[in-house]
View 1 (cartoon, helix red, strand yellow):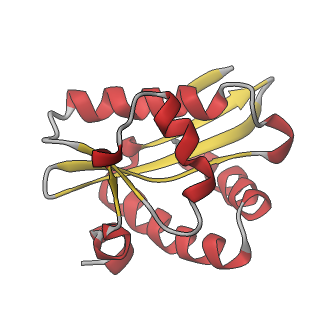
View 2 (view 1 turned 90 degrees about the vertical axis):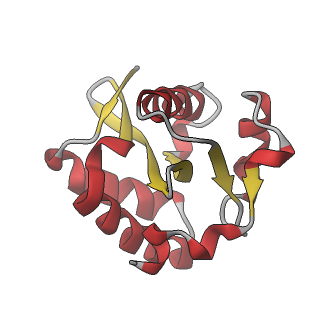
View 3 (view 1 turned 135 degrees about the vertical axis):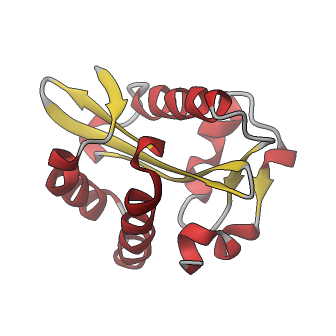
Length: 141
């Protein structure tokens, strides 16, 4: 498996992955935020490849110098293989390189099933935030 920064050539594969991995409403919301993040700073989006196939994506953002994991998605056939963990760790390293104040996991109904993964990586309750709808990546401001 290879985790790397998003490239423009990944756009179609990421779109397909998100559509296959997320509910319709979550996909719609995520695509708007994904487009915003790409226009602001694509280096906070990581993808995972396995055998030359894109199997995961994590979308991060920095808002008021705090790092946020906006969305993580792994292709259904590739879950529980450490892909999400590897992408989260890669983005965490990028946040640390950018010297963010704190790192948060925004909580909404779409990412609650993934919270145990973050907990297994050492994220504590103080890093989970309900400010999901106030993030610039969501509001566009």
